[in-house]
Length: 160
Image 1 (cartoon, rainbow, N blue to C red):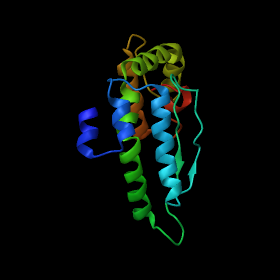
Image 2: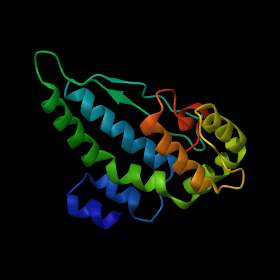
Image 3: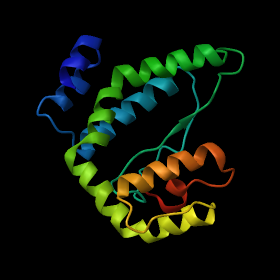
């Protein structure tokens, strides 16, 4: 991941965070905060930038405005936001989300909500094999999102 970041010419703090092959929450938070600051400095409104502890590991699931009224249209706003993300957090965020410890936390959490996840799929009209693997259940939920109008089972359970 570090080599990709170096090749992309990103901010040095992002490269430094990737140097040892894993990303701590503090490094992740610093990268996300730098991204949010970049967006706000460009006039883009950013919301929901608080740490969320409701998932298997802490995250900062921020959202940003689609345009800066009278200054940037939607395409321009997205281009600026994408630039901020790439420069300050894209590679750190990917490494943090896919780190072995994060994956272990995701898998452990899924085990805790597995019965609720199955019930959600059944509520959507899915026939669920109780012996299905966790990955098969996740795939069934993704397939259901294409045809079911209600809330998806990932949102309902907080699983990933």
